[in-house]
Length: 282
Image 1 (cartoon, rainbow, N blue to C red):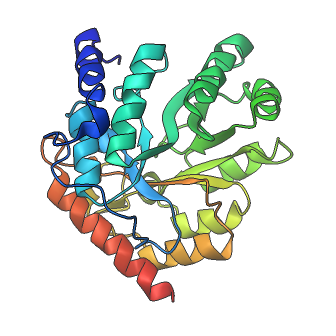
Image 2 (image 1 turned 180 degrees about the vertical axis):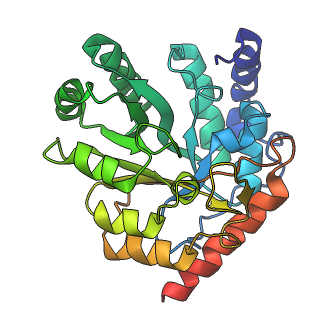
């Protein structure tokens, strides 16, 4: 999906206001950052806010008290123009939000098509690309990860998907470039009757991103619940990330797919649950 020209013209017009002083876009003034997450880079996968445009998305991330985002293509398309990127950067700066990942993108054995996505990452300044690569893409990805120093974070899409099981990712990253690793989607692993905490340990050194969500049931046709209220061992997850040395320039994105028309209150509960779980580690 691509954002409309009208949207970006509007964003550019807003971005021209110096520091957004007095802007209604972000009602509260910026304050000094307070780390409530023990050094973990907690943010939002913007698919959670898929019913909202870029400005509305950033406003809600700010209301959640978070400073990181993994954009998906609606909020930052792969073919974003220079003017669009400049406008988006101004909005991000004003919201005090940093893009630390993008995806989920498809990769294949088509080396030049893959290169275009790495070029996008270079333009934006991204370290982490969450990805759904075909199994014949990795010779290409090895070369591109080395050339661009960008990470490929293999995303498990749940039951029946290409990387359904933990072992699928463990086997495919073995002997590959060190920048090829995992984006652990905790909810999809739960739906696949796999343990996300076990995934963190088995993929030690290769976990660069997470989509943190919880599920009501360990079944394919489950639904999201507030994290910690379903089958996700939230304290165990953050403990495992700390024990295995999750990188500070990685991406941990809360993702809430339920209630797309109005997810904010449930997402606030997810943020509170993450804070509580991390506080228990100390």
